[in-house]
Length: 140
Ligand code: DAT
Ligand code: MG
Figure 1 (cartoon, rainbow, N blue to C red):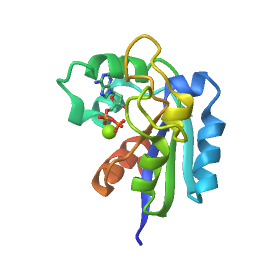
Figure 2 (tube, helix red, strand yellow):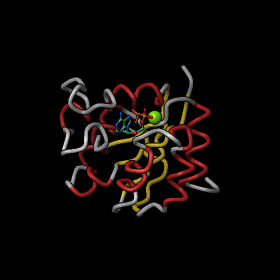
Figure 3 (tube, rainbow, N blue to C red):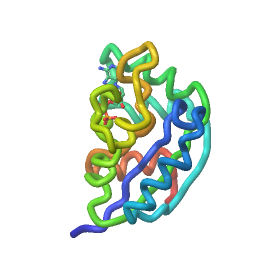
């Protein structure tokens, strides 16, 4: 076991659809702790840093435009193996293909543009989590 932190975002689609509470409910029901939480509309600079690994891909610019289109809820969660555990709660990236029972599988779907509106982000490694937490919660 290793106690970890992960950076979770409820994306603008999840926020606008009133699903923030449902996502937080699932995180808490799993037993992870909410360590920090903030509602904000991210700048394109923050998002370019957050999604740096995807720069140059065809979906990068639409992704940054979507992610800066309205409020998101940024959350730091904490718990044993919560990085992998939250990715499992979130489900596959493509919400149409994500398994029922997962956040994306139960709540997400394609709304025109494929894949992009998939409700949540979760860090994919301890290194990503540390890097992302520094972007969204400087000084934490
Ligand atoms: P994840 O969010 O599951 O870690 P990722 O890091 O590969 O997935 O991609 C980041 C986000 O970019 C993802 O949540 C939605 C969007 N995205 C990924 N692949 C895409 C694609 N083929 N078309 C459109 N958007 C995509
Ligand atoms: Mg990712």
